[in-house]
Amino acid sequence: MSDSTIASVRLGTRGPLVGVQGLGCMGISEFYGTTDEPVARETLDAALDEGVTLFDTADAYGRGANERFLAPFFRANRDRVTIATKFAIVRSDDEDFRGVRNDPAYVRQSVDASLKRLGVDVIDLYYMHRRDPAVPLADSVGAMGELVTAGKVRHLGLSEVTGAELREAHAVHPITALQSEWSIFSRDVEHSAVPAAADLGIAFVPYSPLGRGFLTGAFKDAAQELSASDFRSQQPRFTGDNARLNATLLEPVRTIAAAHGATPAQIALAWVQQRAAVHGLPVVPIPGTRSPERLRENTAATRLTLTDDELAQLEPIAGQVAGDRYPDMSSTAVARERS
View: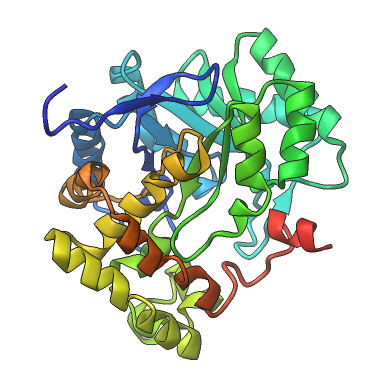
């Protein structure tokens, strides 16, 4: 392995070997403004060059467009990539509509549609994107397990579930990875989900490890700095007084970055990467980017090590963050744990 290539780690007890940092591909298709597609394709190639092998998408991203965009890259590099996609979030022509389906018929329908869009015979890691509490986990995870038996999926994952839900699902069929938001700004998962994953030998895949860009230090007031087409402009943490207060919390991140000759984003990524040692489980964050330069900046963070004193300086930040992660938190594991 060269000095510029990231290390590898196994996803859980039985999962595939992947680079210790993955790539979140959602922003290529929507949510963060216009994408320069040729540059986005350069970013995918740069990721492979850096040792990134876990590429994360979902049928909901661009309503299938994200999977279709990635398909040529996946087919050209099938033996070098680990494909992760998801089902469960249902979208309609109404852009504000987000439903959730976990019923077995929808599981089977969704995997076939994703396989067709991706142009592959098998999905390496198939996630349930969100939990519908009205559908028993035994039914939805049981149907997902049937996909493994049928050879359509290699490994199963869950997203935004509680520790209790993770244990229940794992008893139905082995779960390889849990994907939920985890960053210096968002640490709710440490209460039950992370300990459960560690106990069960399940890997953790943090999404939004940069707090949707806030931890880069780029924002002071999203209402002024983000376009209406950028979904962050509607999120409580990026709005008005919340955004201005949260920006003040980044001072220790900037100080530590300066000491390392690094960027605030690299400090945030190094922090979440080091949670692996703190909690005793594999941690593979999936920061998203459409820029080869930013991709290389992100992977360089895997070679940073924060001291105990630096970690202590960052410890209080999450408890001081103003605003929820989403305008409506009802579909999240946090909401179910509080109910």
